[in-house]
Image 1 (cartoon, rainbow, N blue to C red):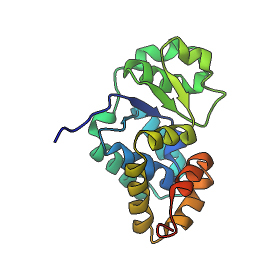
Image 2: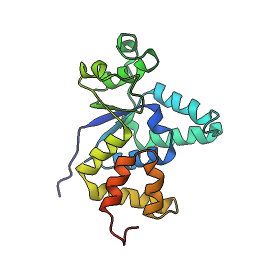
Image 3: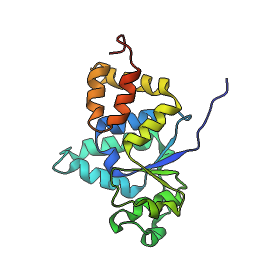
Length: 191
């Protein structure tokens, strides 16, 4: 049997890694080499750590560290280093230049983010990098292999103790178009 590998890689901005259900689904899909390769930098992980411990998520430091350690252990090849000297020359918002620099240095195809303002398309285009919302990114994954994506969601829902319908309701709050596509493909036996 031939195993397919997709060379498409995406740098995940911190905002896409914060909600656990979204992060978990993104990384479950990355387990299959036919879909894509996840990427992040030490600065992205540090920002994730700070936000997880901040007032909105309020995780204690041990839980935040554990979550990040699990990500790094599952995807050791995802870490991009060596990009730091490029950061100041990036044309996007100063606060997120490190993300674009990591994407350029790591030869990523896309940055997955909710932050449209800090990643204008004209800034990314010159590097051949696409800006994708998590909704659009997951919709692309769905079109690549809907059955695989559906199985990953089913597994995630089961591990969370939810049925598919309840889990899709949760995902719809973050990725509505994607959740709609998945729901539309389900039969009564799936819900």
